Length: 313
Image (cartoon, rainbow, N blue to C red; front, side, top):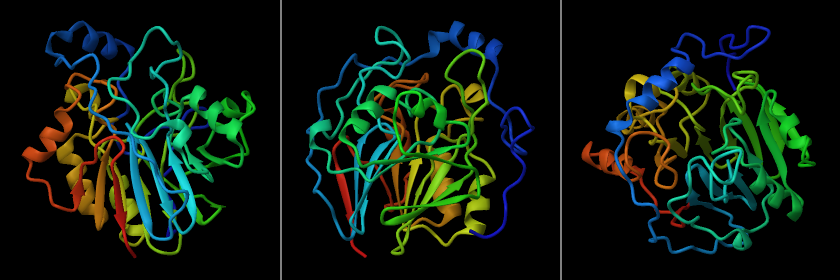
C-alpha cells in the first residue's frame, strides 16, 4: 500500500476527513417525522432459490448471500463479509429492520470460512447472533476496524484482529488491507464514532478484490486508486440512499456507485447493500431499478440472493 491516509481520529472519536459527517439526532427525528415519502415494500418477497457453494475454488467465485454478506472464494480460501442470517438487523428480536428476502445460502450449506471481514459495528453489518454461529463452527479469523474487537471478545468470538486505515494483516490465502470508507459507527446512544469504519482490499496474489463496506461517496476512492492497482473485482453498495439530504454522507446512491466503479478502475463490480432490509425511504428493489435506468456498464453486475459469479484468472 503506497502512502498514508489523512488523520481520522481526534483522540476520542473517529471522523470522516474532509467530508460531511453523519447527520445528528435532530436530523434523525426530522427524517422519521417526514415519513410520508417512504416507498412501500412487500412484507416478504419469496423469490430466493438458495445455492450451495463449493467447498473451495482456485479461481475467483463470488456468491451474494444477502445485503452486504458476500462469500469470496479464491485460491483455496473462503472469506465472508459482514455476515447476517438473522431475521432483524437490530439489537432486539421484536423490532427494527426486518428481513424481507431469505439468505441466498442456507447457513448449514456454508463451506469452511477461513476469514470474516467486518466493516463497522452497525447491526446490519455486525450481527452477533450470526457471528456466534460462525464461532461455534470454529477455524475462522475475524478482521475488524479499530475499536470493534471488544464486542466480539465479550462473546468469546475470535481470534480477532483490529486494523486501522492503511494497516494490513495476513490471513489464510490472502493479505487484507484496511482502507477508508465515509460512514460512522454506533451500537447504542452513547458510543457514536468511538470505533472505526472501513473497507478492505483483499490481495490473494492473483488480483485484488475490493470490499467497500458501508460508505458515502468521497475522496476515499481516489485515495484507493492512488495506492493500489485496479481491482479485479469491487463490491460496491447501492442501497439506503433516500432521502439524499440525510443519507448522502454515509450511503452512496446507484449513480455514485457507478462513479466509484470508474474511479478505482474495477474490471468488474457487484452491487451490494440492497434487496433484503429496507433501511431508508426507497423501496427494497428501487436501487437495482435506478441502477439499470442509468444504463450501467456491463461490468457492473447485480446478483440475486444466492446467485454466484465466477471469474477465471
